[in-house]
Image 1 (cartoon, rainbow, N blue to C red):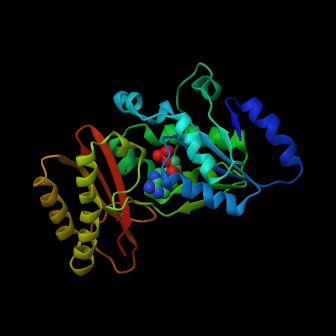
Image 2: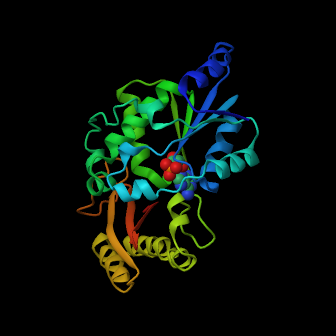
Image 3: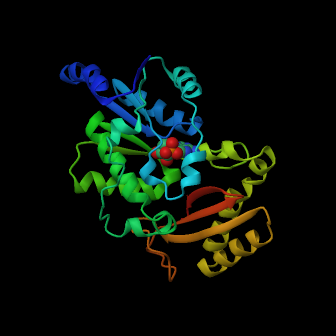
Amino acid sequence: MFIFENQIELNNYLNPLREEGFSIGFVPTMGALHQGHLSLLRKSIRNNDITVISIFVNPTQFNNPEDLEKYPRNLEQDVIKIKSVSKNIIIYAPSVADIYNQNITSETFDFEGLENQMEGKFRPGHFDGVGTIVKKLFEIVQPKNTYFGEKDYQQTLIVKKLISKYQIPVKLHVCPTLREESGLAMSSRNERLTPEERHKAKIIYQTLLEAKKIFIEHDHVKAYEYVKQTFEQEPDFELEYFIIADSSTLIEISKKLKTKRYRAFIAVFVGNIRLIDTISFY
Ligand code: AMP
């Protein structure tokens, strides 16, 4: 098991392997790993000679300092979980200085409007931070394949745009969302919920499923109404947004068209913990 804390050591190890023609699969994460992350690792292992996982809580993508400070970190546990998948996975767990030197700032990106919707609108600067770290990590790891979760669907479109804009020679694989038994999307932030909150949070996915039925049978107006009313009756949950949008442009629906493919996006606060989820609406 190799754990590298800086990019020079990582590349001293990877360079000879690259020269031999070994393919590298890459799974970027912020740690506090769960089965969702491990499913990405398993996919990478199946398709590549070498799999690299990065564990780095990227400060520039957090717009809320408390969220950054409280973000769960547990490298020791993460290493055990990674080992349970395979002992051959390479872990890159850099310090902030290894990534940013002294300059902890984001580049500014134009993702052709994708960055202004939903997570971009409610978390200003978030996708500049995401673009900055993903671009840096691709430069360091130089993977052939990379694996991202559909749970962060907007992020996958942003990464796709980043790859095409900067002509980065990597193939993006988007992997399905793993859920807890209750249906709640697995997330590192779930660890911060009390057991009771975690159980109740299944309402997020249940509401998405019901809203989908309403949308298909009726329209977005009825679905919006249903979701709003559902969360108004839940004092422990605060709906930040529920949006049905075109699944490729992410522009919010104004009129339901048969020719379009839609997707629903939701962000909900449980206390001060913010959870997101998304499902296709077709
Ligand atoms: P994070 O550590 O939250 O930044 O996530 C790292 C990667 O894991 C991202 O590509 C996420 O979309 C993906 N991911 C997070 N949660 C899940 C999940 N429940 N199922 C599948 N992939 C996930």
